[in-house]
Length: 133
Image (cartoon, rainbow, N blue to C red; front, side, top):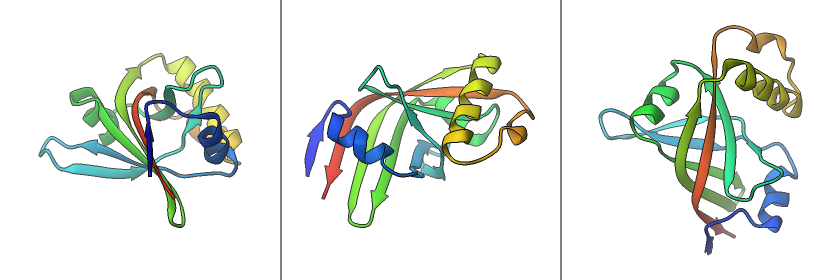
């Protein structure tokens, strides 16, 4: 197990080498962890953020507005990575829509289904990365 506060070049390559569907944990109003699968991307200029996106008003949006602590788990068999941090939400719908379209292309999906409803960008500011191999 290794721990760091950044996404290393080696880890970046592992995360982007194939399509991954991380499990995101947020904290519900009942203080229990809530899990959901989500698409992600990485900022090519920064090693301390993970980029996410959701529909405005979804449960993860509401959880993160109340408590920005978040954890993401990426797995490949017994090799897995946990990224912990704090979320910053942006309500710039046009930018968020452009970002979900980019993620949709990356994940092999069409853009059309993402025009419905306002989108929210979620930037996870990485505080700790734990890699298990």
